[in-house]
Image 1 (tube, rainbow, N blue to C red):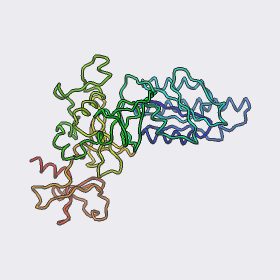
Image 2 (tube, rainbow, N blue to C red):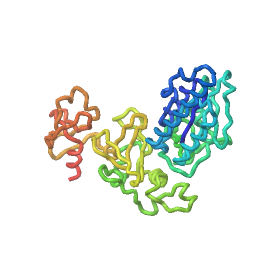
Image 3 (cartoon, rainbow, N blue to C red):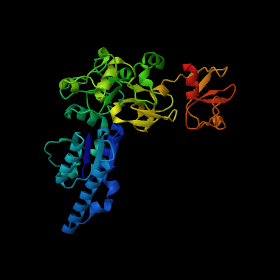
Image 4 (cartoon, one colour):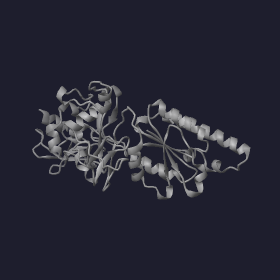
Length: 383
């Protein structure tokens, strides 16, 4: 989705709040074009100069957009003093088959800046009374869906009651009961809405370790999403187009995991202060990341904090908090914060004698004051 937050003033705070809630990229015209250029005298020469400046801004936006994934969302904050520039925004969204939504920031004194746009969903807000939750709920119910996939990044809302445009309460995608109280919602679509407890179920990692297929824990190789036919679930788009389940379809993978309850959609992990979203990408997308736990490269599937660009292997998330090794007599405790002063001099692995990077997790014996790579302990447990 591409959201253009427009208006002559006070739009920056609205754009920033939306970007924070949606975890979208943000490009602000005021960060690129000096404010002084927006307040030039209204002479014809100044108008021409401003028009050229805005055209340059949109050219720059398009260049930046080409370097990011538009299906992860983009918000553009712009004065949009020329309504003709809407065609550039339409073209930008169209190149990635994404929706374009306009959010007009209109205060009483700015009423003359209101534009009419054809073929684009427009929402009008008063920046002084702006509430992101209310706007996003309205957007979720009114914005038409495209037959395209996105990451379904779920955001948490506490004590919030969403409603459809008809006034009927929305139902949890997993348990099919009416939503009330804390919930997670994908703000790219209103297809995925969950009770907090349903999104985090099962919250007991012991149960996840028992039920999670081993192929989803793979760290160095893309996970095998191939499952028995009775466990494969087609997404609504593939159902509509009469297509079979495909490991190349993100929504098919998402729905299969959701209904099979192989992995929780959301995990609250002791290593990070924010909830972590489950991200499952088809192998063909060649999605790679560096695990913030072990430091190794990961592929296709991770638990991710979109705010902090924090990623973990599924296998690292499921590590036991305490472990036993055949090479040591005592139980070892998993440590996330390697930078605590207690561990500053523990810069090598007791088991393999190789260097231990301080930013990576490790297992620690407080009795003997030794540290070991998590991989070395995992290798012992697999024997």
